[in-house]
Length: 186
Image (cartoon, rainbow, N blue to C red; front, side, top):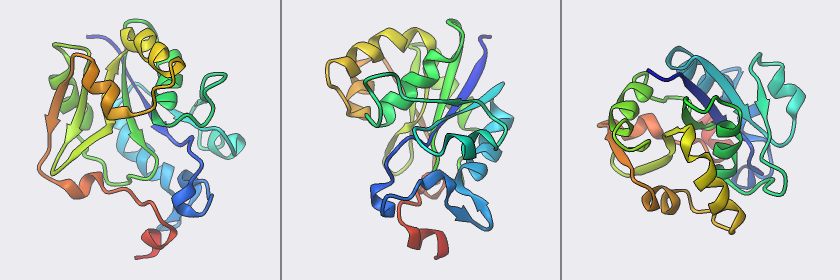
């Protein structure tokens, strides 16, 4: 079995949170990203954090921080996924999740891996599709880089263009994103 690493996507501009760095916003006294780390760490050999600002604050959480590749800064979740793929061995898998989703399934990696093994890529689906909750094999590094360099940004569009599987989940609330400051205090 190839290694499985995880990357938390925390490299956005936080526009729906008024420009605040989402991953560092507090939920129950802890940064959102800490909640996601707690859910992913038991499922992966190593957790990375993809961030483009407040790098010292993210590094203080005790996990390696990766940045969007040069020329692709703030290019969206696919750039964070590529940053993660660039940081893992060629024979490894990368589990991805956004920093604002604190209730991820504890079997996310296991179920995505079952769906991804035949093709090298899978994303989660509950009531709707969740392409930032995905598992990608490192061999997708070059196709993803090519897509991004050509200006592609749509996560689901790129994933659908690749051979892929879908891991189905019953609980949509496990994938709830906290996109607004009011979501943190609701």
